[in-house]
Figure (tube, rainbow, N blue to C red):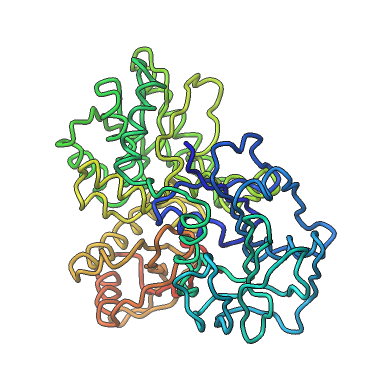
Length: 509
């Protein structure tokens, strides 16, 4: 592919947003840590340097060798990248008197510059830095300023190298998408050919070439990712795809049966396996979130291995891994600084002796849904909220028991069904209930109670990398709380989580 965009990640929380904005322009891009620049750059048309939590003045600041990129490929340096080019190439970067964070407006824009074509003065941008570029690097030309930042954007004479002190990828930069399009299309000449249809055609062809007549086993979860992966594989290899849907005892209420029923009309070869007791036994006595995840992941592999042996001559294990899983599992400093483990990313135990195929590993969540639409998958299924792989185990804080699972399944069912009944489900990106490891005093009738507390969580997001809590109607929350307390034995208090991501995560564990 000759139209790729390379994004070098310096550790910014916004790096994935850069990739998403590029993909929204129908341009394919990939993220690499700054310390692992691809040796072969012939497939890339442009390079973007991300921001970073580091200061270029620090001793441990990222300092990659850009000699194979600069002056040879169009390059856009964002925030830290802009300071990097200044600091190490003849300019000067110093600490700001005050931290420059938040909204700003471009007060001056140089005329007749392609990077700022169709962007007017006073355009709002988003700043996030504690250093400022005092002097520009050698051969640099200032392109834009704000009231507080003199050198908000510049370019290097004699090469297609551009630098901006603000973040075009965040929504607060109102013309950020236009700026990225100016750089990638008008300056770098990148074609806007990355579409769901093109992805399906290319992926089906690649799967056919890679898999041939070999058999593939896939674990269905009922979610969007595994379903789209299954339909893609089915389109490529037909009857050689064997799907297994495992009930780990941690699914939503009645989900095992309802999901199997959904798959009946999709032409997929699906086998349901009820392994609830096996998973609950593996989780007995475990309270640490990582230990619970690992226990579920290991048990899932064991169950899969048992079922895969029932199918003769299986060669591949297919997984619904998507791009955020891949990125979060590799940090800019090498091995991941684990926020949470992803049991669907990485290798398999040697005893399974299966190769891995991940047809969606380069897609973001919203792209998966668009590909699913292209494949003709029912919109109700595509509109399902994400559900964590470990299921309710990470929504039950502390140890897991069958009784706790029962309580949370009932609470979750009331909450999710209520969202559907009130026509709120499609306005929420993800919702669920959390069983807290505390009890609170309550009064029911004339009796004092000391029972469980549950938290409700509903967020709006695009891909789960950032999320805001949803301002659900008070009347809905009131009715839902009353219904839960009246119908679910063992619960006497309901709270609503109004934390955003960051700083909180969507799940509590």
